[in-house]
Amino acid sequence: MPFPAHYTNVDQAADDLRRRSLSHMAAPLERMIYLGSTRDYNTGLYYHDGLASRFSEMVACQALANCHREAYQQVLQSSLEDLVQQLDSYVQSTHSAPRDFIAAWKNLQPYRVAVPAETDPLAADFLCSNVKIALSIWEAHQSGRSRQQLDASLPQ
Amino acid sequence: MIQLVFSLLVGLALLVVLYFFARRGKVSAEGSAQQLREARQTLDSLQFGLLPNDLVHRIFAREDLRYVRSAAPPQVESLFLAERRAISLAWVRRVRGAILDLMRFHRGHARLYAQLSLSTEILLAFNFAVLLMVCRLLQIALYLRGPYAAPGMVRTVAAAASRVCLISEKSLVFLKVNQMDTLKNDPSHHGASV
Image (cartoon, rainbow over all chains, first blue to last red; front, top):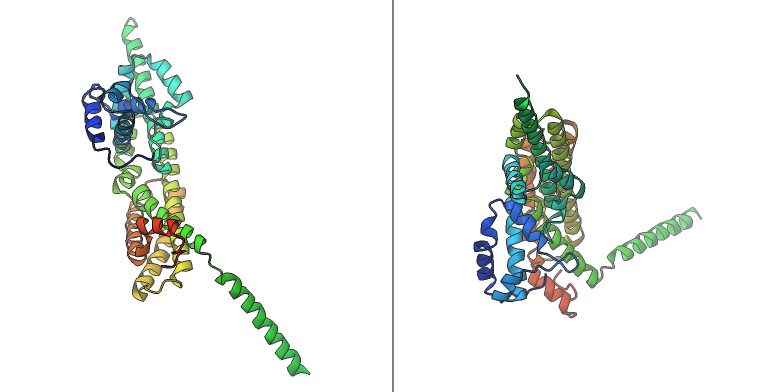
């Protein structure tokens, strides 16, 4: 995105964003999905009303893009074990039923559109592959938990 | 008579050779600038996209395999190995492709650039050759035995590719972006520094 380099308050806006909206999201995966959703798919520009009112639309856009790249890098560098935990934490934050969540993520693969623009295609493929595997592991864990609950509820 | 035919044949052969030389010699200034830009992009893609330690470490991380084996059923382990194999093969293919692009660029431009050092070019040629060979071997190993088949070779490829990038950058200092922009914007340059 062509932004002039003299936006000195982009860092301030990014800090503000981290302190307010992003501080409620512990997992980088959650932050990446959220920040990806603030981007207009038609223009590639990010929008955040609160941030734009405190700074400007352009500064808010650049700050959101910077935080998005940061979250993406953190997800990319996460181990698979960490990613499964992040996924678990994310599902809990959405309050979705595990079965519905798994079905939606397997069919729609929303993580594919949550990747920032101008990232290396191989790194993006690697991230999507890792999320896919983490989802399968998390699904297996969920099935195990369901089975254990079922076994516990059956009369001895 | 035989001498005449022989002389005519030699003359004809020389004309054909001259024709091919003349065709190869046409290097357009715009084409050169475009090739310079592409070479810079290839270098950037290698240095910042494919070779960062974090990415290479994560793609080939054994801790992920250990975790999958301990925490997931066999079918997920198969999925994991298939996915990692595809990614690792794509990584080597991309590195090899970028190295080939850089090599072609060097071969095409070395003869036009007066300030090249012979020792640097020989070192570069040697590194290119070794790297391409190791990449091919690594591809075979990953294809046949999976993503964790040759960790040493992965380290060798990453280190050698980084070395080639550094030498290439030192060798072709005119590949700096600011100069590329000057080349693009100022018609008087027309790739004259090449």
